[in-house]
Image (tube, rainbow, N blue to C red; front, side, top):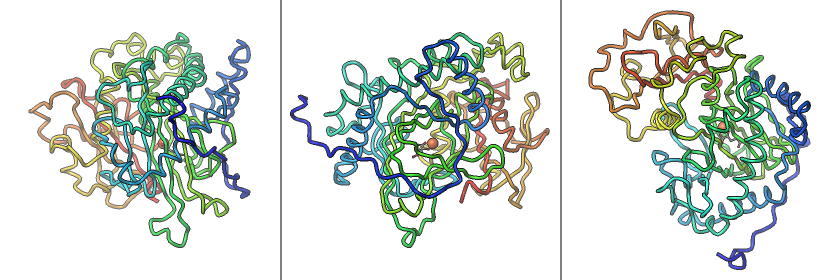
Length: 456
Ligand SMILES: O=C(O)CCC(=O)C(=O)O
Ligand SMILES: [Fe+2]
């Protein structure tokens, strides 16, 4: 469509920042204008190492993505969300079919909890050079969005070239693997679940806020790296690795809030952290405004096996074994696509079979808290704990292969060993469990660890 046929959009004007002094998280700033010089790049890698192995969040400045283009994304997003409910629902999302389409502001009920309240969002797939979705069939793209797809495609490409690729090179430097290690596993032109996420959190005053302060409950992101372009309204909080308290993320104008997510954590066997974060009602001076976020949700290419990177650093630190260093498990582990599909099925009520919910028979109350533990050789121990402790977990076994008829007849085979699951070894758990039962290759085991505060 010719630009002349595009609807005129209201120019985006970022709302004023909060004047309130909040308990801000001390995020590392990665200044990408320093990326070109090798010495500076080494210093950046060092800074990223510190951030990604502790808070799992950092902010990027001087990315080189023109602010006008970012503002255009906010204008497009704001205009799209102003369309009628019927219009928006004409591209309603079906999470089982991939991250594309629109989701309305009604609370989204996951198996264990309400995920979001008063949030609407639109997922836009990566466009190829012809302007179609990279993945055939992922075509729930509203005509309104289609009209702007060359600008959206440019934005996608810049997020990848100017930010993601550079962060992946820094990640590779941290791990002492070849510079293109993660880039090769995140090829923009091949099938992946990478997408642009446009979010609008509806304004609600405290008085009518029946659902409480949380808009998007505590969660970790599934993919590799998420880039968040915040529209100056505060609301994002991350759980401090120091004291597990919620800290606010400052939406600095022009900066990009970045976080490492579950798959990147798995690819580093937990060395890169995937930290729990949530979105709450904005502070009092911003409460009357809707909050917009544009996210670039970076996920690996579908065919990437989930194995730890053969990193000399991880070997030295005792995080990976010699066998893992030599890629011994490559053939028996799941791919990123299998993992992501499994996670979606794990999270939603829809399309579940009894077998996929094997363990839940033993824990019929979805919010049941239990203590558990695991070692690589022996598997997993679960101990039901009706007194909700400071941490607990909900476990689902899911096989990504055609389901094997003869599942272990009882869960007791899985129930043994020590030390107890807690927040700190969650990453390790998540990493070792997906192949803990060597008898059946390609088992996926999802462990969701909650603290009571997750549900607040
Ligand atoms: O809106 C935000 O600031 C965070 C959104 C988020 O956590 C997500 O989309 O996964
Ligand atoms: Fe998130």
